Each structure stands twice: as structure tokens, then as C-alpha cells.
Length: 317
Image 1 (cartoon, rainbow, N blue to C red):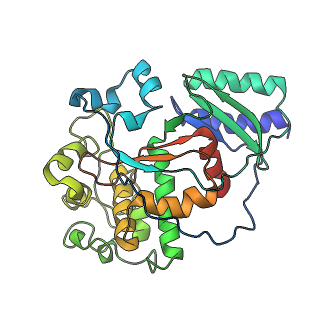
Image 2: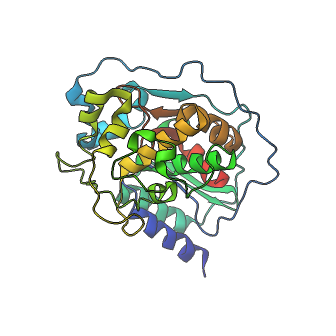
Image 3: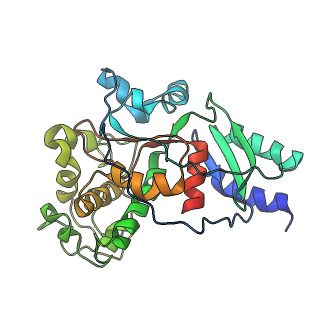
């Protein structure tokens, strides 16, 4: 297959998934892997676990309803709007070597893709080498951009790390073994595997335009329950199907995975990410991971990285 056809086939699939976001596109047979990794010495604990933004009007924090201009400015600086963990760059950043530039025709297609999808950036790696890099919406190489649900891949990676490190014995363990407060709820009998794959059978409404949806009600639970909001909300949900039989996209369940990992490893999600992702992947910039207004983790959303560090994560994973 011609290189251009391979690249644009991947780009077309990605364009359906990305709007207004930074994209590290590992396209065209990107098979580069990170080999020969030596054991990473865990970094010291975070010295400033949670940073606080300036006071804001609550109406100005309704992130789902920001207009395009607000998004292009605020998605580059989420730490100025929300509290979160600041994780420093890796002590030894990984070099992303330059490769041969893509053809002019393919570069033109990617420029059009950025415009058509309202994306903030695209980086193309082939066999671990950067062959294309472009930015829009005011983003630059050293700026960060919010991940939204790409954070779910980070949280699931940390789940895998916790299993490898022996903090979690098996994906088939019951969720209640690690989150005892879910005992007696619809999550009784649900396995870690079913929670991680969103097949718990517990009902959930992820409609972002419905103010009464479960995802929209997260803020109310934070106000009422503080750092325990995730568990409080999820334990109140009813069952709609037997565990393992129905898949439903649920940000709340990845938030629960974040709680589960934190309980298992005994440290904040962002701190574990520093040891298991940021350092071994060699992030060149710092990582910001948003927390809810009472300090609880948001495993299903909202970390911020440079475009090149999203690419480093792709290479690392």
C-alpha cells in the first residue's frame, strides 16, 4: 500500500474521534518500541501534591459549555482554572529523533485534517521518529493541552502497573476487595476486569447535554461527599444487566479504577503515574492532573501534557 494511503486511512479514523484536541498520531506502521529499559528508581513523593488556581466564578468553570475561543485558550492552561497535581518532567527526557519529512501532498492533507477537526496539533511518528509536527489554536511545542478521556488510557496503564507490582493480585478479584465501601451496592460481585472494561452491568448515563445525566451529576456528589464523591455516586447506581454481559461507556467507572489503584498502592494516582509513566516514558514537560474541587482523583479525565509527551506515552505503551 502507498504511504499516503496508509497514513490517510489512519487519519480518517482518527478525525472521527478528535475535535479541538492535541493529537499524537502514531500512524503508518509505527512499530517503534522502547527496549532495554532498566528498572526505574521511584522518584521522591510529590512535594506539592495539589496546586490551587485563582478564585473563579463557578459559572465560568462549566467546562462542557465553554465556547470555541474559551476552549482554545483554557485547554492550554487548565491549571489556571482547576486544582490538580503538578508532576515534574522526567529527570532524563526521552529524545524523539527526527525522521524524513512526509511528502508535500501528505503534509497538505494533514494540514487540512487539523483545520477540519479543529485540532490543536498533530505529531506523526514512524518507527519512533518524528516525521511531521504541526500546531494550531495557539498551541506551541512547550504548551500543554488537556487530554479529556485520553486520561483513561493512563489510568488503565496504572492499573496494569499495580498488578505487575503486586498491589493487585488479579483482574478477577472482586472490586469490593479494594473498595470496601462498594459492598452491598450493584458493584457487589463485579470483578476488577469487568470494571476496567466497563462491563459491570451497572446503569450509567453519559449524555453530556443532559443536566440530569450521571456524568453531569458528578459535581453535586463532590459538593455533598467531598473526596469520597466517586464512591458515593457509583454505589448509589442500580444494576441494569448481569456483570460481564453489557458494555456501556462510563467515565465514572474509570474514576473508580483510579480510586481502586490509589487504595491498592497507597499513594495519589498522579504520584504513581510519576514513577510508572512520566519517568520511564521520559516526558520532557510536566504533567498536570486535575482533581475535583474537594481533592478527589479524576481517573477518567483531564490531565495535561505537551503534544510530544502524548507521543512519548504512545511509544512507551
